[in-house]
Length: 192
Image (cartoon, rainbow, N blue to C red):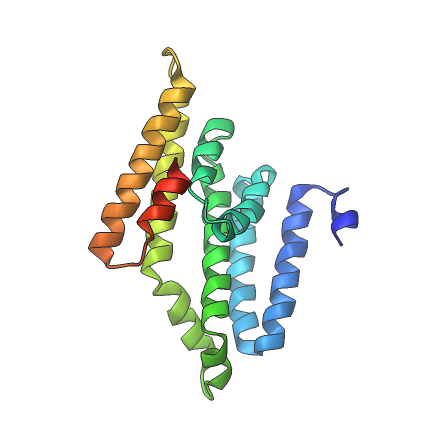
């Protein structure tokens, strides 16, 4: 699959990746696969409309989360792309949190006897950490983009420093207010 997909555009890679996720979720339970399929269809309708050329971010965000450095992606997107990249960065973040919720609660989901779909939806939509991360990433991307576009000396460097600082403070304060878990050490390392 990797060899074949290396010759196709990012948008097709994202679709194939999503199909693989749905097939793997189907192996767990049909209801979860159906819920995630509906979410992905909605995401793709928006994704192909606004930022299909930024599909790499949908793939890079989950990888960056597993490497514990996702904080660099919105800064890079703000430096290299347009505000439409918010769609791709947000979807990549949502995909990561969906996969994380399913992976973390795999046995609990398998053991639920009734209404697995509503349980999955509530687990995903009730994830305050995901919502905080999506909002902060979008704000940071916009801040970095706007500062980078200014005609000031060292605009890129200032955009990186200000974006990283805003990201660190917003995630730290947001996690304290919402009472979500955040590793301060990895937040510092990832932002730096």
